[in-house]
Length: 271
Picture 1 (spheres, one colour):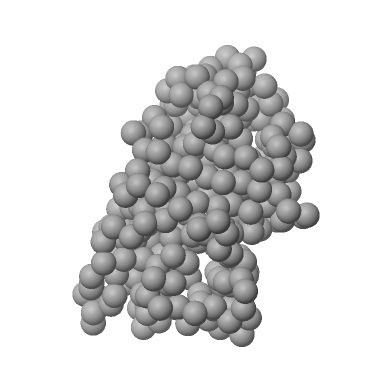
Picture 2: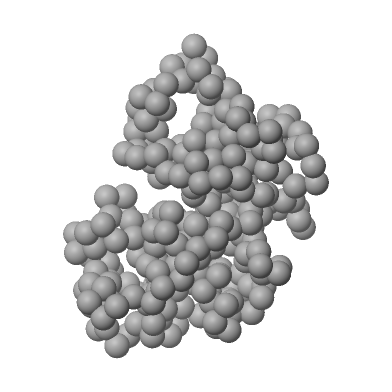
């Protein structure tokens, strides 16, 4: 069967400078095995499959696969899938768009010409000394170079390490083998166009160009501890030659994670 297909660049207004996402439309007839096989074939960090919702409050449902696993939630697939759904003629039931995924219902809104999602709740826990030592070894730095490290997201799990500057973050040369199962995000303050520089390291996949779930957790942590203002912009992907931009904002209890999306490829796939 043929299925409509989009490839979207997320967290950028400039094609091929963000994080690509494959999107398969109308994927309700596909089996788990077919979805997993296609995601493995695309070899992108994530592939999203758009389906009819099973929750009456949702506008659409999405399943998110990496080349090896299914994720209950991820940030850049949330924005990219929503962008693709709207571009294909999707019409939300209300003022906000509601996405259904394994983690539950995610609210998405359009503001200032870009999409943003309300980050799911997360428990912030400072890492213990043993974990900090593992993080430092994985990043090939002295533990003293990490100002503080924190668990900032559980699904997917991210450990964040705060550095004193953007330059220290960009100089990192991680040891992926030493990370084991840990996903590590590095962040440092920047000056100029953006407020922070971010990098995300995933064992088995390498460095992620731009990461919505990591930045959601970082924002909850940095804003909540007074290390960042209630509204700021982060850069990610610089070390990879990308120009990702993530727009973070706290409104009440909500952390909104926003970014531009551009469609780079449309067509049909056969499965």
